[in-house]
Picture 1: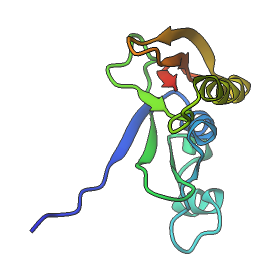
Picture 2: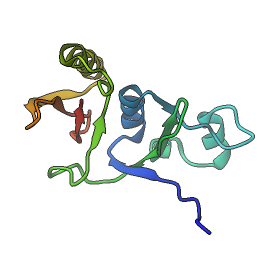
Picture 3: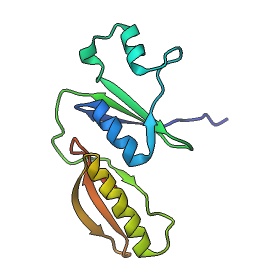
Picture 4: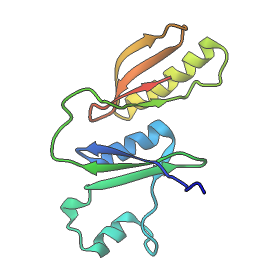
Length: 146
């Protein structure tokens, strides 16, 4: 018998709420629901007795619809110091056969992400002519848009 395995991606963050908001835009996700019995996260956190200064200790996002991993952001005291060992690829142009249309779709998303706090690192081209944009999120984590 095969067990069901779920995947959650965990990201260390200085501000989990900031990164949850950014990555919601980048991936088309939404903030995860509060625990059962609560309408909002503020209501749940207040009821938990957690001091307000700790309300940004964690946040999570989930897909709007369809499959995809939950992404959990946890507060850590240290800042990012080196290149990521793992990064996310945001595929907005996949499935578009015309290279010009695909690149236009990529660049539209890049502009949206710049508006949400991302920065462009560089444009890259692969051996097969594919193009992608290397970017960083508001805390400096590298990712690609293709």
